[in-house]
Amino acid sequence: MKPAPFAYVAAASAADARRHLGAGGVSAKILAGGQSLGPMLNLRLARPSHLVDVTRAGDLRTVTDEGDALLYGAAIRHAEFEDGDVADATPGWLAAIARGIAYRAVRNRGTIGGSLAHADPAADWVVTLTALGAEVVIAGENAARTLPMTGFVQGPLATALEPGEVITGIRIAKRGSSARWGYWKFTQKAGEFAKASAAVLIDLERGETRIVVGAIERAPIVLDDPEAVLADPDIALPLLERLTAPNPPATLALHAAAVRRACLAAAKDEDMPS
Image (spheres, rainbow, N blue to C red):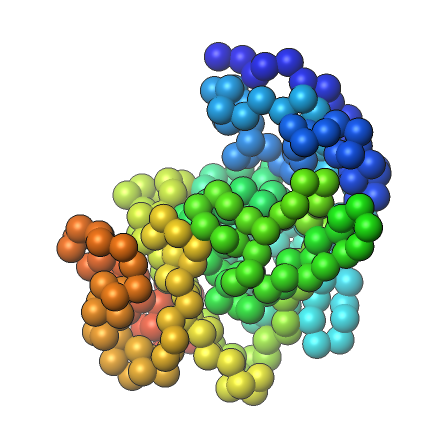
């Protein structure tokens, strides 16, 4: 199939994008790489009247050092994280996360902001940025606002974005060399969406320990007592049984295994393959 007809405009800046969104009405959409939106257009699952392309908006492609954090422009591509073209707020974790996203062709086009706006529960950035305690910076017609990832992603393919709003950046706290990280996802073959995933952050210097479970057909789950799970990862299974709607035992076991693998990766302070 082919997309339904739409008007196309390339925005020069975030403010320009907001103006075009307003002119396009409620059915206007942002195009930020198109790796998720493109297939939806071709299948006519999405039929926007206007597409506002932000991939060339200069202020959405910068990295700003804020002292204890880096603010990444929403239109920075996955491949730019992977290749080290932008500074890494972590000890190499962002590059490793980006490297595991789909295929290189996707990473060459897809953007971090586009991934968050789509809010696929299986997306790598959705679960890992939740674990990293990232914040999403949003610009609207009248004011800008900042939301933590836990407030931004509200469910499968659902976010707190209001009509006319644009994600302008993602703020990620800097992590020192003493911080530890683990991320594990299960896929049937390279490039496929994860069937289960989990991310673990241990940053004692900043007083943060976090375990997040993703790819579970809802917003990522932030476990309440991460220290207890780190001490005994086997308790992840009964925790997930209580926190999620009824799921087949095999599905729950897969997610619990992802938690164990991520905990192991963090304990060993090394990246583990998916």
